[in-house]
Image (cartoon, rainbow, N blue to C red; front, side, top):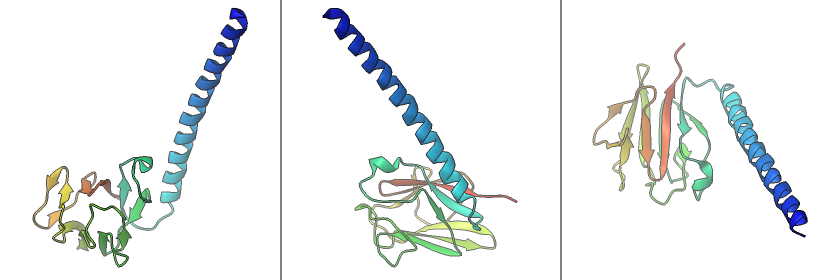
Length: 145
């Protein structure tokens, strides 16, 4: 009886290891696939989600392309709509002026953070900056030709 139980536990443990390896390979594949799909866009600057999507209680995309003026907020009038309860209707705005991107808080209740510092004025964005809005954190990426 003990030997049969030992074999069952052994095979269950091996099955769990294979499932764990499968999960890791699947995550790597999905990440590479999303990066590949992102490369088809024409925008030279975009926001990449840093948070894990499964930890957020609302739907959100991995990438958002930035236009000449991009508003972020909970309102359906925002260019990037995020249904986070800690984000204002029009929370912040990213604008391009002479090829330089600027981030501006639109008097939001909970504030907009750039590299973990609350911004009070219009600030210039640099490649690799982290933008915190509510429960969401984005990485600002500007592709250089």
